[in-house]
View 1: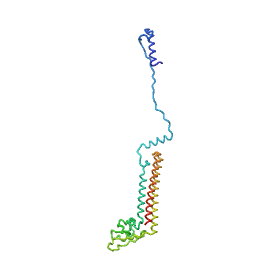
View 2 (view 1 turned 90 degrees about the horizontal axis):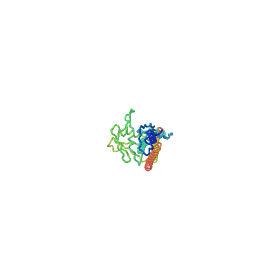
View 3 (view 1 turned 135 degrees about the horizontal axis):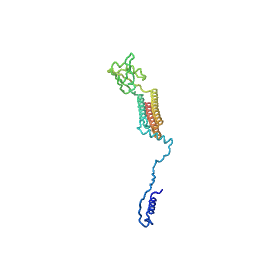
View 4 (view 1 turned 180 degrees about the vertical axis):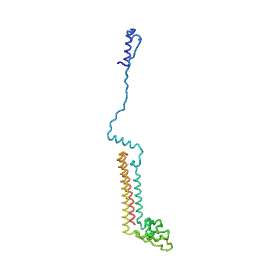
Length: 269
């Protein structure tokens, strides 16, 4: 089968022979008659996509990870979300400061510990009320002045203070001018009370460290759940774990700094 330019030359030669007008096709004009073109078969070209290399387990995991991370990421799926850890650490440090502020220091007694005592107003065994809601506690040098709101509450408040484990003795107003006033003299610190306060500060620090440890365990459990669900990249989980350890280390350092400062103040009191 001829095609293209070869078919054209073949048709010219065949026409010249039939008409006998041309003996030398190259020298004279050619009259072409009754040329019937033969059908030409054309081959069409098609293109197909290149075949990619068959992926293994890593490729399938990457595809699965891409499908899971196309949606919006929630805080539970974000390994860099440390809001719960930060909140627990802040709460632990605030509680530590509150516990240390209730200890004896420099011969003075924190009024908050007296205000937190429970007072039984009804002798028949009814409910109790917070002392701070019934009276105002005012530090005055080496004494505390308790200003009671009502006359009927003076005796129950005095009984509650004397019955507590604070070793305090409330006395009426020495001038006798104010029947609603109770005076609590704070004894000077001794070696025994100083040692007990230092030990209590150490225990408060241990409680704060345990709270930080529990917060870290909760954050680690969250990272483990994200790892099993494959909702975050392994590199992101590794970076998040490193940041978590730095936060915990900083928190433990802050707890140690606060406790050491409190111990020094108590020992020098």
